[in-house]
Length: 94
Image: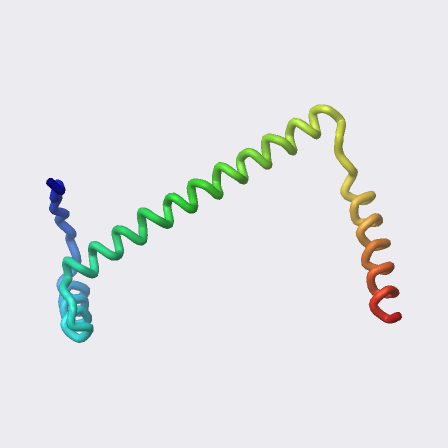
């Protein structure tokens, strides 16, 4: 058996009226729209959480590399990529 829950949402009167008009115009119900919105929100949070974990792991690896002395100074990286860009531009002209 599926468990049901109810939410109470406090809206100012104008927003509540606009919402009621919008769902009527869309020929749906307030409950259906809110269910879809909650479901979309939950799914987005799952994706955001996964991305946040991915980024945190990347940052941790970067910090570990810096602590181990395995990094390239910003000026050196800029010079290296400037050289790569120049080579790519020359190759695209051929």
